[in-house]
Length: 244
Image 1 (tube, helix red, strand yellow):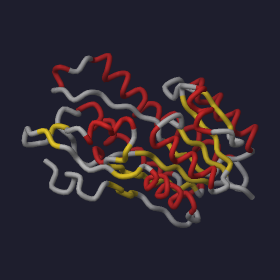
Image 2 (cartoon, rainbow, N blue to C red; image 1 turned 180 degrees about the vertical axis):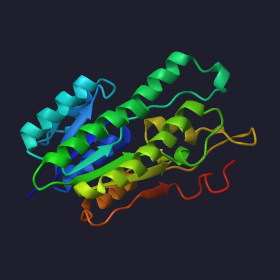
Image 3 (cartoon, rainbow, N blue to C red; image 1 turned 30 degrees about the horizontal axis):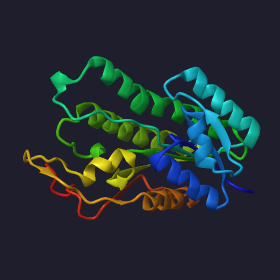
């Protein structure tokens, strides 16, 4: 039976690259994101299920997963990828509205999609599946001025650990991929210079986003008796080891 995956944030960046890798590998792929046009561009003519959805809206998330269940019959993997960041700033210069918007996507959106996937995987037959959360290097250590983003990614780690525990009796595995400096539009600033812990501005190395997609594909292809709780993939020379 062909395996199925739902990828959130599939309209650009890591989500788009990962979706195309899974389509090329013969998976049935559902593309979820706010912009229908961008999802159609990701599909690039392939037979993917396009699910326009705001991950911060519980009703839209439930409706999207119901459409997936009706169309695919089951869900084998969720790549819980949707997220956003904010410009670097000290915490007292960050608008509360910006924090609420970011946490709505990076925390509430992760929760809602994981909740819907867990419920579907629990009740489907055969029972089980895999959830892969997109964490970040920032789930371990911060960049300067990144309180909202870093807080949100530490929350994702808590979600991953809890689902990894709670999913055992339902044959649901949960792991997290922590990514550093994959070359996407969001990471373009790294090639021009970004603030460092010592106050300097430095250009940082980046890696091809295809390596991230390959890593997710590997995690997703493992038998459910095997799990990768945490995988860190990064441009080799980025300032992570020793950062701060």
